[in-house]
Amino acid sequence: LVATYFAKYFPNEAHVFKEHEIDGTSLLLLKRSDVIKKLPIKLGPSLRIYSLILKIQTQLNDPTLGWNCGL
Image (cartoon, helix red, strand yellow):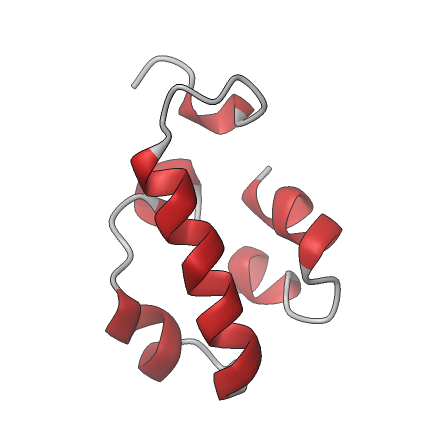
């Protein structure tokens, strides 16, 4: 579900979330350095992706994020 969600915004980089088995729970634990240094994504897209991740981390009650149900 996480890869599918990011495919809407970052179609070229979304596969990384599937390859690294990043699910909803692990997404909530990602730090800026994890996204920028540890994921094989160029700097520009990784900064935009982290911005979206930060938004998700601070808005857990968003009903469109189906993978967070039950947390």
